[in-house]
Length: 96
Image (tube, rainbow, N blue to C red):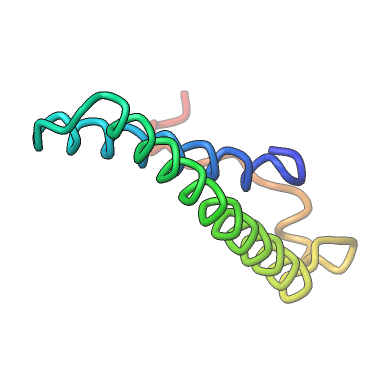
């Protein structure tokens, strides 16, 4: 995913989930249709904002974790010789 995609996905999922829950709960409580839709829309917008913030936090934590891992385990010419030229795996089959 490119930068900024994760918060949008989390935001959309939270908003649509809140909408669905509000509609089902409103129907289960036998509320009027306009009341159900109004509450569902308000819940969707509120949860979308919360989801956007949560998505931004998740994205930042993941990026920092990846950068920390890259710094602690650098890949480059300083690798041991045994890692730079891999040997074929031993399958246990007898050589003919």
